[in-house]
Length: 316
Image (tube, rainbow, N blue to C red):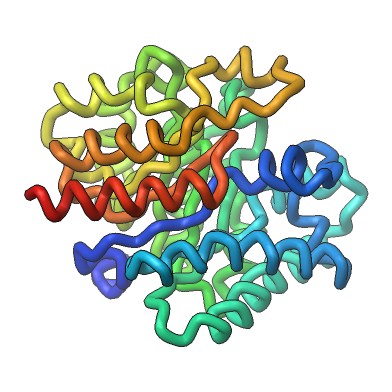
């Protein structure tokens, strides 16, 4: 796994950007209803796939304009068995839609021949991304996520990325499932306004635990679904563990998770401010090479992140 991880293009140290908050963009900007916040059912229809192509093109074009790499992240955050059952999707169709998500991004990659790109299969939590709920043991988490990771591993995906993970046993299970299928894996934790995981565990302890129990299995770690104000001080004062964090997908909004759950209007923040926040993070964490967005962000925020990150690199 370590050898596989080192072959990932983003591990070269060059800047890669990825997309923003796909679900909030589809709901609030595209006017699409997403039951249970799930985008993967769009993969089942021609119209849905064209909507996803439009979405990815808007972000990949930003990377082309600014000369960065791009991580195509699949629309499969909810594409695991429990969520599929709630949405009336069979297990057979679930496997097909996961595989189709990579095929769609592979087709789009051809449209951008000069773009250095990576195809990532997105994994989401079994439960609520904000609330730990009933926490699985690693073996149960491994068995649960093996279905989706197994499907993605049969495709041309370069890696799988587990996003909005809020507890370490589930993260450990995901890593072990990916190891079983021989595909690189990234773990992206979400944190509360105090910089800790929703379980109360510190970010440093969480990263250290996952590494210790998986033989440093993740290619790297990321943070997502929190505003930089919620975790920047934690990172600024962090120890050696922070060097394992190579990516950020922050929210545009400063709202807490509880407040976001109740929000009826999109808080898209200020794209220029988002760019400045990322430049600040990169000023003391130069290993941040994958930059994208989460709730409330779109291609405008990613463009500002590109501009700010490039200015930060030039200043350095």
